[in-house]
Image (tube, rainbow, N blue to C red; front, side, top):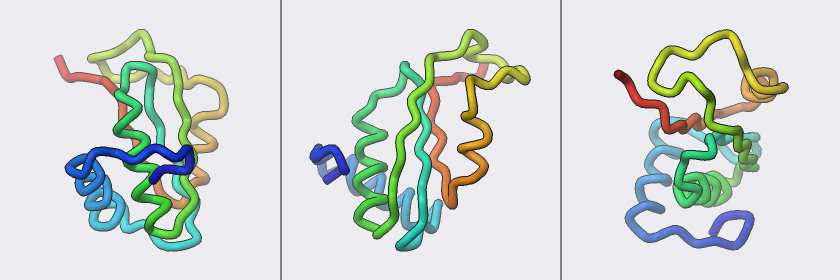
Amino acid sequence: MSPRGLAPPADVAAAAALVVRDYMAVRAGEDVLITADTGTDLALAEALMSAVTQAGARPSLLTIPRLPFQGRAPSAVRPGDTYRDFSRADSRAARSSWTTP
């Protein structure tokens, strides 16, 4: 269950647990920043938050507007303090709806 009380479907929860445990190697006590843009299905972010909580870490979710350069390499433009906050987290799960051309 995520910090907001939402339980993801079993298959999504299993995939999120795999990502958090095996790819991100999240440990108890860590702060984990999960980023998503407004084009992201928030059920995925909730599943990651739930898996992070189950790992004994503290998740945070940062949602930003979908940027105008979708599908291309990002420019130096970063909304607000996103980059600073992202770089200070112990672990990161960056999900965006960017596609490659």
